[in-house]
Length: 53
Image (cartoon, rainbow, N blue to C red; front, side, top):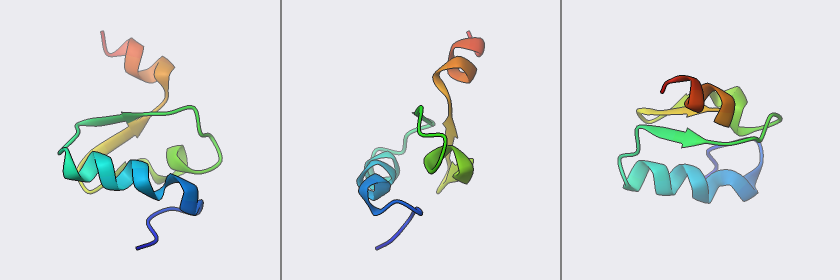
C-alpha cells in the first residue's frame, strides 16, 4: 500500500503504525516531513524532537 510520495519510505510508516509510535523522527524534507502525521504518529525533524525535551 502506498503511504507516501516516496515508496521507499512506506516501510517506515508501516513500522510506526504497527508499533503505535508517537513520533517518527526524520530528516527527509522532501517526503515524510511533508506528511506531518500518519495514523496517529507525528512526523517531525530531529531538531523539533530535541526541542520537546
